[in-house]
Image (cartoon, rainbow, N blue to C red):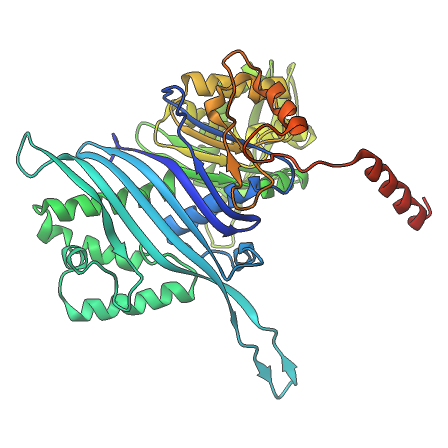
Amino acid sequence: MISSVVRLSELRIQNFKNVKNGVLNFNNRRKNYRAGILGLYGQNGSGKTALIDALQLLKYALCGKTVPAEMAEFIHVDAQYAALSYTFHITMPSGRYDAFYEFCIRKEEDAGEQNFDADIVREPQSRLVIFDEVLSYSFAGAGNQKGTEETIRKGPLIDTRTEKVFVPVSKYECLIGKDKSRAMDLLVAKKMSANTARSFIFSRELLNAVRKQQKIKERDTEFMRHLALLERLTLYGNYELFVINTANTGMISMNALPLAFKYAGKDSGAVGQMMLPLEDPALIPKEAVEIVEKVIRDMNIVLEQMVPGLRIGLKELGIQTLNNGKIGSRIQLISCKNSREIPLKHESEGIKKMISILQLLIVIYNQESITVAIDELDSGIFEYLLGEILRIISEKGKGQLIFTSHNLRPLETLDRGFIAFTTTNPVKRYIRMTNIKDNHNLRDFYFRDIVLGEQSEEIYEPTNNAEIALAFREAGEISGS
């Protein structure tokens, strides 16, 4: 698995938030860059955050985790369900996969219950259900006999749109076998996955059932190819896909630092996200202190170059017993500039935002199999610095970065093949700019198109300055301002 690479290559969204239909291809079709970047731009409320939320939904699914009930509200108001489809390009020693994962979500409401003794009626609770899951793939790589090539056309591996556990039957028998009691257990697990808003394909129950077959089928090339795909996507979702939404920025405003990281040492590594309070010392498990120290040491190498003279550090303020009885450490993050140490909470929100994502940017620069999606990447970061960071990652990086932004500086520093735009048309929500020449400044071209509307779809819904001014005046008269 070490030499394998997963890259998200396309996303299709239907009836999700304000996107009735949208397709985004993440590949730069103009030039062959090693890094994969997609910056999405557009006016407020035009579908940028829907992209990030769709990737967050993917992470929940691949990790086999329960999708929060509030995401049921993301289904378009005029639709009964939303459909999402993800395409991956996967390179492994055995060959190349194009994997296609799709599913739908709908909202269901549990009936309200009444407590007759207390005469209290509980309001109906809504929940999200994942259904119609399908995982398909095509393959090109090593055949059964040494030195031979094998090509397999796109076909379903697991299709849950059936009363059975899944179809096709041939794939089911290859992965699970013919044991009837195992089939009954999986039918129960399928129902439980639906009731708990989890993916069935990437559920622990189904994956473990497949893994149990490995010992008796390790010489079965077809089985091992199917298993490798399932394991690789599971690994990707748990350890290589990171989604940073605006809730992170909100936590920073509340003096907490959401520190996302993926750290690999010589003997061990760590992946995850810690929420470190900045107002008061943070209490974290003793074993987590070493991880934070390594991540900070890694970040400081880059941070000093991005903000000259700035370093961050960690002070241990003593040990304390945690609620679970284990030993924890009280720590405080500090900022050191010009030989002066101050608590990190006194730094600007821009510095805190940069620190919270910096370690992931380092991983993107150095590792191919990593996807990081960040909503409002530009929030609080100086626009010139933002443009230069993205230029460096695009030209010399290896991983995949997907971001939304309102800052237009990256339009001048990134190849235009890395940029997409939202439109005012909900049934064709995402486009790439056309009719752009190599000597055009994409930022200026974008402004021009806002005014002239020369693309196939309108990218900005015009506003009337006089009407806005009148609205300010009327609002002031009502409030007595």
